[in-house]
Amino acid sequence: MESPGSSAYLEGASTGTINRSVVVNFPRPESQGRPASLPMYPEPPAVTANTVTIASTEKPLLGPVGPVEILPNPLINDMDVKTIKKGILIPLKTTLEVQQDHTVDQVYVTRVPTKCTNEVINLLRKFLPEDRVKSMVHLRKVVKPSDLPAHLKTQFMNENEVGRQIHTGKSSWVYIVIGEVKLIEKEEVCKTLAAFDGMEDKFLTQVTVPANPPSSQIHAAMWSSQFWPTVYRKNNPLGPHPSLISRATEEIKNDTALWMAVAYRVARRAQESGIGEAIGAVIVQRSEGRAQILGVAGDARWAGDVPKSATGNPMAHSALRAISMVAQKLVRHERRAAGRPIEDPNLDFDPFQDRPLLEEEHSAYQEDHPNPDGYLCHGLELYLTHEPCVQCSMGILHSRMGKVVFAQRHTLTGGFCSEVRGQDLPDVPEGSAGDGLGLFWRRELNWSLLAWEWEPGSDLDPLPPIDRFVHA
Image (cartoon, rainbow, N blue to C red; front, side):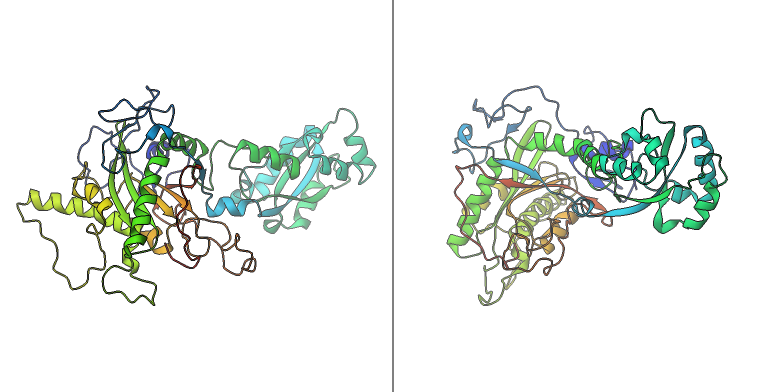
């Protein structure tokens, strides 16, 4: 698995997706085909322009950004893109990032004369297994008394006369982090330290520290004042790198409202037509300075002969329909290339409902896939009106989507958010609904993507309410 600082990791980060199953040198965008063993990672365009334009028009879109040309589509050609408010993109936290604020550990700390520092450190390395010495790498192992947080200064200074002397004036002592309490026998440490000159007081204490590394400089500064001096190493072992999130946010923030307006539109039509709930999805490809709609789908869980008393057809959720419609483009391409006729299946009931059922779905469905040799939805962007359910979340991951943005959380049934389920519902007892899954970025899965919650601008009318137990 690539480390967050490796070149393979960072190169793959250019599209907001990390394939953890292999370590490779990714091909450049000139490759039109996909190598047999890995997908292609397109390189994002450089920033050279100040407006986003719809092709064949001169309309600026949503303010300054990079050179993003929005290709024409009947669903957006009639929109006044100059007046659409951008809204706010809020990056989702991973499960580890959510847990980090609540996870602490205990470490042993001693203090020694400055002249003994190297001897003590070398002995500890010899005394302790390597994995114990190298644990807690985010903590400063040697700290001057003046660099301690205020509460520890007060505690150590007032313990005895030696402590008062050490913390008065220029000190010739330092504090050393020995290791985690759960990994070390206290008696052995005390016996070892007593062999050094100037260690008569045998100072050994326990200090509470953050168990996980900080994910930003802000976190490091906060923990340094609350626990122990902490180092931010410019990576994020708990989730996507902050610079990756920042770059990806800049790429999509100025046209997110455009795609969301389409998703809201198809969501309303799905409910009005009776085929599904007011839930919609739009798939967008962003490549070489252009962005275009590849798929549009409304929820269709009630389409066909589906009992209205049940939860509907789970395969016809909007996210899965949109992905399947993109797959149909690839099927058409393969059939044409093989000289085979393109025919719709003759089924009594089509569970996938991946043919257009609404007028809004037709235009995107009829257009060919711009990269028919690529892998399904690799590196594409998915815009949803609601947080996808667990089933759809896994389908999104398996399709190799690159970025996902949704407008409304579903804290009881959603699969992307990592926070405690039902935390925004007053009548749900705290913790009773379990933890969020945060499926967009988990170490045990072989694909990760970037995800945001989007707060719409004031000019986008809210969708009809959906029951909180509905799986979107």
